[in-house]
Image 1 (tube, rainbow, N blue to C red):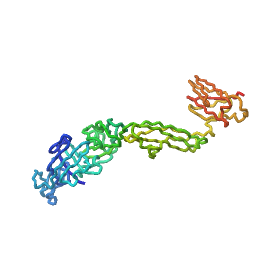
Image 2: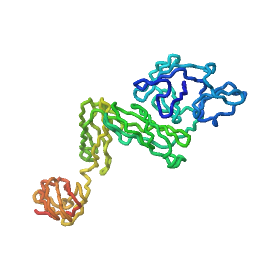
Image 3: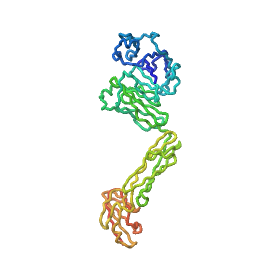
Image 4: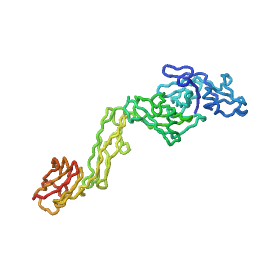
Amino acid sequence: MKKVALSFVAGSICFLTACTEDNSIITSTTKVESEELYASLDDVPDCTPKLKGQSVAVQEENAFFECNGDRWVRNRGDSDSVEEDHSILMSSSSGKWRLEDTDSPDAGRDAPFDIVSLSSSSLAIEIVDEPWTPSLSSSSVQHVADLGVCQPETNPIDKGESVRWRFSANLSSGYKPIDFAKATYEWFFEDGAPSSDQTPSASTPVTYTKTGLTQASLVININGAVGMISCSPLQVNGDPISCECTATGGDITKDGGKAVWAASCTSLSPITGYVWEGIDFGAEVTTFSHSFSAKGDTFAPTLVVGNSDNTVQTVTCPTVVATDASVPDYVMVADEFLTLPAGEHSVYLSFMEDYSSSDGTIYFTCQANGALDVSINGVEDSSRYFVSIELPFSEVGENGFVTITSNVETKCSAELLP
């Protein structure tokens, strides 16, 4: 890894010889005498005969100093002290920096630079494999971790939309709220320029014109220490995906306990995958099944659908509650009221066991404290406080089961009418 220490005018990125209209920065004859960078002269070790001839960079003085064996002397620019000269072009087109150094073996690299703010008057620049993520390189700066977390305020967003990235402080880190309030915050975006916003804990809005996953990083200068945080990724969606998910089955007796969910999705961009329960089944598998083992068990699969425009859509599928046609929810005795909660229930008519005739009618009455809607095997009645439904024997299953559905809690009874 090659490091280049550069100095600049506080508050300005165009800090050396010249800036081009596209934010390129051109420098010449940059002195590179040591990798040692110190915040102030107080941090520099004592100059001893053993250190004679060695040089250090002092951030506070914005200068290089050389040890003469007794004390550190400011380097006034004597050409004999220059160990290495470079003509460096750094350009920023999207917050990423590139080195064009004709004298460097790294010249022409596609990888941009990381930019790390050490104070308001210096930058440390490193060539790394993950170039857009800031890294902290100076051994004279205290590095801290676990300062908190950062994430986009809204996630996901659509292409062309803007979002702020927000930092949440970890008050168990040893720093007080006042420390975070006085700290400086510098944001770096994978698909955007570094933010100049110094507002504590929040970036300026960032607009995204590319789809897919993107990230941000935050460098915090707090009480003389520096910490770097990688934020949670942001999903930027392209062409929208419209989906509907339906479910069938789920009865232990009739369906063998198997329930099936089916997704129907459309988009201007081709669908590239259906991810059921975390497994990508490809673009063709639009159904998912689950087998229940007992009545009352519930299940709803997770489904994420993607398209070729990098859109990722989470789809909500209905929850299926396992039923069993052979096991009723309730048992109803003739001429006795049975309290049923709101919803659909399987009810076994126990008095059917003693009635052998296939003719006749069952007369149901239900009551509630208010408007009441009741359906028994599909026959409906609505009224206030009281409803009645007649059901022929022929519409009652051979096993004596009926399905009663109500909008509110109700009390129902049944009477045989031969």
